[in-house]
Image (tube, rainbow over all chains, first blue to last red; front, side, top):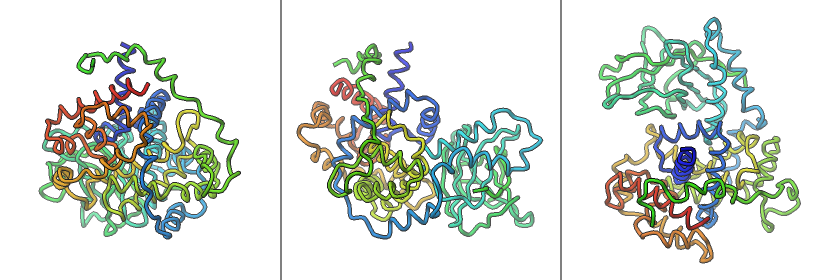
Length: 237
Length: 216
């Protein structure tokens, strides 16, 4: 049995390196990578086996402006150490609405989520606003990072069941008169990046995810159950 | 071949197989003692240096690898400007993750390229982007596979990977290359090879098993 599971994990690592795991499978696998050293060895095993292909790639010309853009994205002064758990700890401190809610493991989940995002090569420039969205029973379920360029990075940190014919829809609300405005759709539990420079972003602005019919809410207002909900907050970077 | 058996023949050899991964030399020995253009770059050492906040090390990785990275990303996202964006994001991720890199587990260069590939796949499958729809991608996939053909042709003759890929049935080999080189999904590969989705999945798995047996 144990040998079988190992064999299955090795194959899974092979599929991961081939890049054929679908979004949810890939996310789940990356979550496991972050806590199972053996999986990292499996992944390294296949990376080494396939390395000749990448090592033989014909290099392309590098535009001179690319390095400038990278430096810009790094903010000029960021030290690598600052991107890890410390960020999460500060996030924890900054989210007043979490206080008074008691749930074990919330910090752990968040640290893990941030670590997984980084591990997966998904780090993005420093966010302007971060919202941690909680499930109705107070568990962290997703994170939204809103960037200065208007991109909104939504990262689920738990699995949401999305039945056939349904989709996840992200909303934000900053003006009760206007009501919730759709940010975009996510077809299953996975990270999604939306480019919405037309939307404001502020502290106490609400972000939420609802379950809607495929293609999004027909009324352009949330119709399905609210899966997670949270307030925008300033990350202390 | 035992490919059809429920339990692959190498299951019992797991531990021996894993220990066959070569231990890495200490990456710190050679850092910074050579010019970027001529000598071999020690990727692991440079990544470790990035983890300590050494921006010059990141720059060195960039100077040595950005061109190859754009090449790898372009095979997946197909458009030059998107490939450059992928590489830009990859370098930010490299910088921020470098402290977590463990040089004892795998090659630094492979770690760098995995980040590029992940970013490229994210971009390819990011639903909010104005990339070709899945159907367009499938249609395009049916027409073009030059990148994966080229990648295979460019493998050195003494490459174990080339020898072992050569032993695969041609369409299975093509499936492996379409996935790794062009970032195609199971669905796109199935369309390209004109086989059912389930067949594609099992072909790829069996190809991995065969490659492992061949390359161990």
